[in-house]
Image (cartoon, rainbow, N blue to C red; front, top):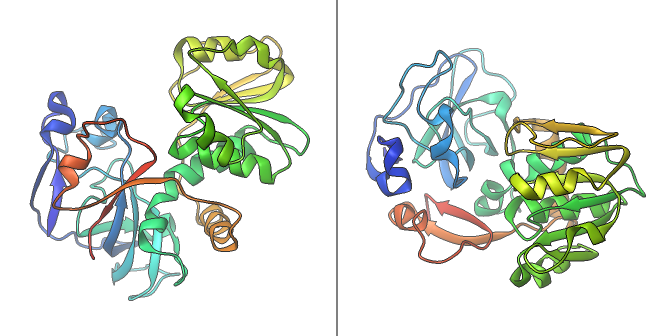
Length: 305
């Protein structure tokens, strides 16, 4: 099969190559998926799991990408709940070869059915962004109707999901980002917008939940804004700052079939919009991950026409 492969961590995305790799076999409880579309996070090449297995052994050359939409082509021994020919989407294991390829072997539990009226490119854009937003807001942030959310990076792939899901849950959402992001953040449902370069974050006042996708000084400033009993949720590593009278939680997103079902149903209903920027072919994937301009939205690789 054709796949994007990385072999040199120091080279970053510039070290990506499109090459031939063996087709993956289906182990116990696995399925093999014929990939139609794949998603990728720009920071993946900084993750230890891209380069080593769970026993910390080198596993390069490795195939990055962890989001996929495609069709089940084979079932491993003992696999239940899915069938050959079924349309699926989901989130591949961090420590295994990923989805920037024509096929992937993946645990069946990491996949959910993809309805026939949802395009593969849309399906591949949902797992990391949608699950990160869902788990951060509802599992870790325990968001309730009537609460306020400060959503950093509100115009990005995750931030637009955070905004929409929080609004649907009855929260008041204040988005942040660059000045150029204002209209997009408001279009996706933010009720206020803070330009992190030109506005004062402290003017926001107290909020119930901060969803942090940035870290650093922005996180430190945000921690001071959290109400008593509120929560700082972050995905950029252990919090450097903690609320005086609240919680600080960092988490790594996990595959969850029930949550994927909830997310894709909202897409079908028109309650949730994706934020896809660039769509490229597998032949053009290396160039897509080395852009000359700032990325706007999620980059999706269309593996099959």
